[in-house]
Length: 98
Image (cartoon, rainbow, N blue to C red):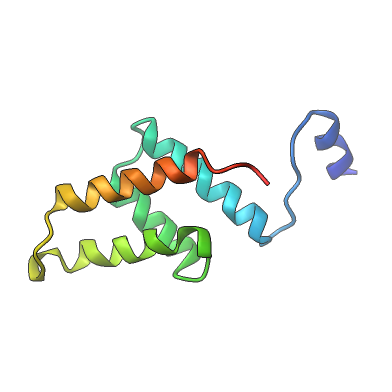
């Protein structure tokens, strides 16, 4: 019943824990970052916490979250990582809906 009702409204029903649903949620979080509602660090933290390194669409974001944790030991700056996170968010935010 719910899938049919959502379809009538032009909305997509994603089964619990489906890859398509996880990707849609990640794209929604990316749009929150791009709207200034999340910091790059908070965005990567949420993605990494929810999907780890398992979701291919967000794998690079999980790696970038790890980079934030070791910035003091490397040669990258917070601004550099923030810029890459924002670029990834743009990629996700414009990724075609499945």
